[in-house]
Amino acid sequence: MVAFSVRDSGIGIDPAKYRTVFEAFQQADGTTSRKFGGTGLGLSISREIARMFGGEITLDSRLGQGSLFTLYLPMQRPEPPRAAAAGEDSGRETVLEADPPWLQGLQPRDDEPGPEDEGPDVDPQDRVLLVVEDDPDFARILVDLARGHGFRALVASSAGKALTLARKCRPCAITLDLDLPGRDGWCVLDRLKHDLALRHIPVHIISVAEASGRGMRMGARSFLHKPVSKQALEDCLGQLRAFADRSARRLLVVNPDETQAGPVRDLLDHPGLELVLARSGQEALDHLRAGAVDCLVLEPDLPDMPGFELLDRVREAFPDMRPPVVVHTAGHPAPEIQAGLARLAETHPVRAAGSPEQLLAETALLLHRAQADLSPAQRRLVERAQQLDPVLAGRTVLIVDDDIRNIFALTAVLEGQEIRVLPAESGREALAVLAAARPQVDLVLMDLMLPEMDGYETMRAIRLMPGLGDLPLVAVTAKAMQGDRDKSLAAGASDHITKPVDPEQILSVIRLRLEGREEPWRP
Image (cartoon, rainbow, N blue to C red):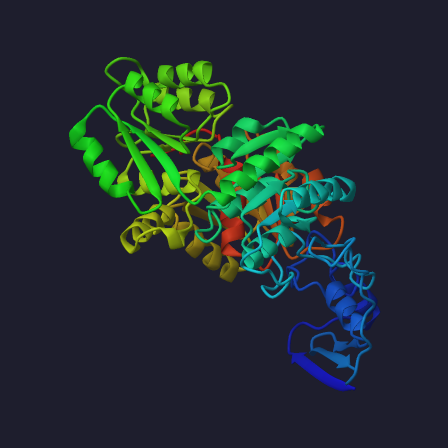
């Protein structure tokens, strides 16, 4: 055996409490009047991991004298049993099976990507389809259909595995179920569309959720509602394969002002992109009769018809043609344009762009152009557009945590997105801040292991405050065992994420919780 010992000179632990502190996130002093918060390290998880390696953790402590923790590990450890490989042939279709028995029951970070070296090796010539689906029967149906269309299919049954495989294997398309264990598919879609290396991958949602408009607004290419027919799946996969095999993209820009159309053309133009200009709605319809387009950039005001009327005529004249749309506005879109965008988003992938950087970023997203396909100057503009998220900028977030280091770390991440941060180091302080600044606060990040008044009690108290019944409350905690998420939601949390927090994950959760809510309150 090899032993690692860690000694501290803290308050110590009563020997009668040794067993208690190793239970799932318990403390030596479990009362609500305690003076010290929990460590948040999860001694229960630590002991389970040690035992997985054939080792053990011991404790020697005296009140007022400190504690000594010792980790014992064997020099050699038997290999754990491996799950049987799936697949009916040579393994060209890889299905990720359930975790092996020695990992079941201990999955604290299933909502997060795993190590980058996970996943199968993929030949660059393969047309890879990533199927994100936790129903093994439906996943197998998709795998078999995908094989018939010439795809190599990979299946991920959770959000974390989906993101890992997307980064490792770079599929040419993704089918996404929204009802996933641990973290839902909305998080997967959001993370994909905010990752510059992955945002170009077409995502086709296949789900029972009645939220096609939200999916389109977030960048999904299409939405199929379960139960879905075999023919609908065949049509979807056929379109996917045809799109993947076609390297050229056709972009129609509808702009009546030649002084604006020229710079727009120069901004977007690139080899592999056929750019067509139209100065009126009727001219745009004529171009559409000549051939389908992959994306449409539209000015709201046209000389012969309003921009949204043009889209209605396109829908009537070409029922099978629903190109993604970028509405080009000067700055923030007016309320009537926002209303038109919301209506259009129920049937089309639609985005708004108020600056040249946003216009380039949004057309690249909807045309599914990879970063490598852009010129160096275009890549810099897209990166600039991605630096500040309009959903986050100007919002106010209350961070409740008794460890000032956590507040500092989260503040650095949020202020980078122009989010205003209000700190609170206890539950009672959080209630006082909300009572004084209630209209300004858009979301609360709540640590659970707080002294005196823990996060559960604080969230329940917030839910009883007038006007705060729907305030997004996100539990940010080291409590990561099975059932902890449900306990947070039962106490009033809108979401539950585990420490250590990945900056991209925390921004994704905030973005999803704030999407569609009112505009930021500004003093």
